[in-house]
Image (cartoon, rainbow, N blue to C red; front, side, top):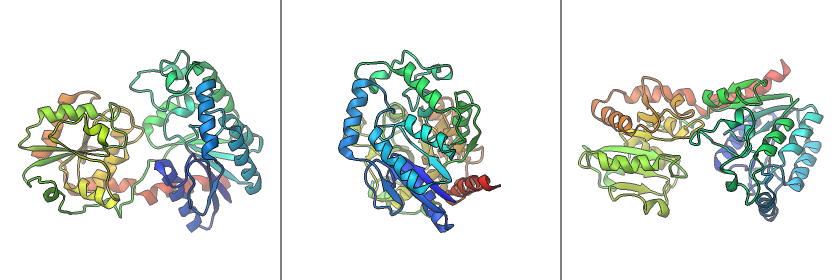
Amino acid sequence: MKIVQINATCGSGSTGKICVDISRLLTDKNIENYIIYSGKKSDYPLGIHCGDSKEIKVQALRSYLVGFYGFNSKRITKRMLKKLDEIEPDVVHLHNLHGHNCNLEMLLDYLRAHHIKIFWTFHDCWAFTAYCPHFSMDKCDKWKDGCHDCHRYREYTFFFDRSRELYNKKKKASEGLDLTIVTPSQWLADLVKQSFFKNYPVKVINNGIDLGIFKPTPSDFRAKHGIPNDKYIVLGVAFGWGVRKGLDVFIELSKRLDKEKYQIILVGTDEKIDNQLPSNIISIHRTQNQRELAEIYTAADVFANPTREEVFGLVNVEALACGTPGVTFDAGGSPECYDETCGSVVPCDDIDAMEKEIIRICEDKPFSTGDCIKYAKNFNIQKKYREYLKLYGEIDE
């Protein structure tokens, strides 16, 4: 069996790392496999780079001028298809295709014409909307019947609202495929079943974490930051802080929580975010490695995730694996990271409920370290990627 994964990146970013992890597992099983990508060049030996940075910039400009986001980049896509001709794969596993790295129509037409089995992991909602990878905060459901009159179109094009045309092009391109869709959460799977992909089978495979890295990891973190042992640490971790990730919620919590008893720490910030933060929030721009992040998770008393749009929420599980319980908004797939033994879910945008639950978790300690770690084992990365291998293997059954 030959398997080809196609993604914007290889080894970088969340989806690029997922592709490499799956590739390594396939290689361990002596399965011939490759990753075709067009973003930043990688040194991963099984990666096949088909992009060009200058060309991608030109295609990005073309997209902003003409408006057909996801349907440009013909030269890059032709190089991808040439590689597929050479490899003759039995399976093509698609990941993130949006951006300016691929022409969706050309790729799907090729896979349909060559009768190739497709697995497509939806890492967000872009595949079944005109433009948007996320739409929950907008409370928009036009995608169910046909996108049109998009109020966000200027995020993707300077002049023309192509939402109706793009939606129809995606819908047509997605017909008649030998396709199984994979989603990281049941929440996203339920949305897929309301979209124009509703007649295709959908399999839920959660994203996983490396339990060899994310585990209780004692450190001098408190001493380094001058935080006494009797002060509760409320931790937030995100990459791309803003309203979507609940930055405003942490700012409000910093006004409400007793400053003598609670210390808020945010990881993944930058200088721009620092300018918005009050002095009683500790800002950590980035960690040196995942071990350092595990040390911070371990030092925290509660992990708070007031996300408003989330396909899954892997940071929740990383914290659990380090023994730290959490609380999250009831938004997207984030609640699927917890059960009643290790965390809480409160209504989205209910800051009062978030505050009360943070205090309860810290002061009443309803969740044990052991139960948090036990639940996190459900998301063992090796176990999750083996589910992909099982999925690929079903072809021969």
